[in-house]
Image (cartoon, rainbow, N blue to C red; front, side, top):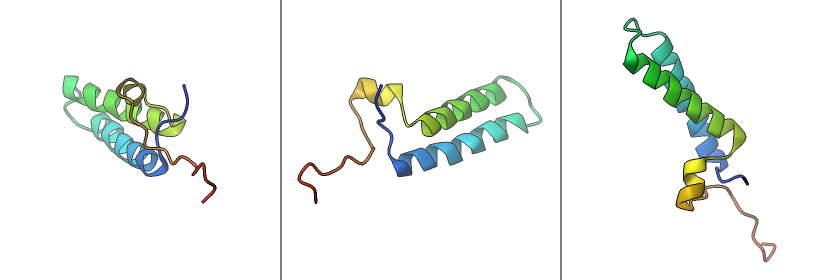
Amino acid sequence: MNSNVGTVDRTLRVVFGLGFALGGWFTEDGGAMSMIFIIVGLVLVVTGLTSRCPIYKVAGIETNEKPDPRGH
């Protein structure tokens, strides 16, 4: 699978993913909602670090910067 996540998208995924994961980890509840936040956060971090999103692939979305074929 080729890269389909751009630089800005990657940065936002990692930042928000860390926020979700840490927020879920440090809540005093420790229940199902905490686990959901941790899992969503980890998925965001992994897709941000690898520049690949399977949902984008299925939907045909690409946010990465493609080089201009004309060389401009």
